[in-house]
Image 1 (cartoon, rainbow, N blue to C red):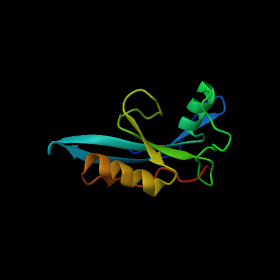
Image 2: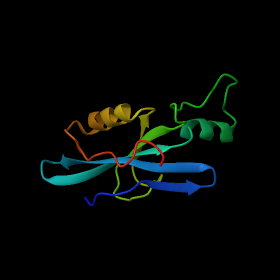
Image 3: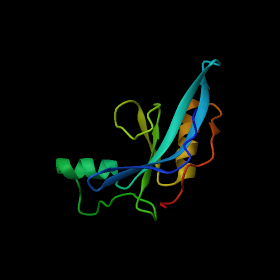
Image 4: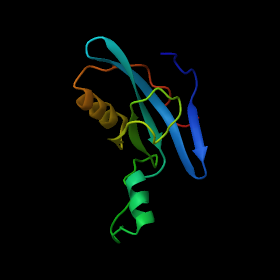
Length: 119
């Protein structure tokens, strides 16, 4: 893996995605695989339900104190994309890391966080 030396932020209208951290795990005891955790500044499932007209009045976006939630990306792109395999990670980095760990049932070696806060 080539470490990123500075924050990676993408913008698409009002939507923002940040690459937070990368890790590596071993598939089949021989193949190194990349996992990445991105923060997005909206509740993906809330927005889908809103667009489809399925929200209840009491529904609220599930975001952390920074107004973000985390997704686990199982691809090698340096950018956030819904293509490929993406899993919901939660509203904290620790929750997302634990979720990734549970999904692969293996030890993930995490790199140092690329960023935790906006610069």
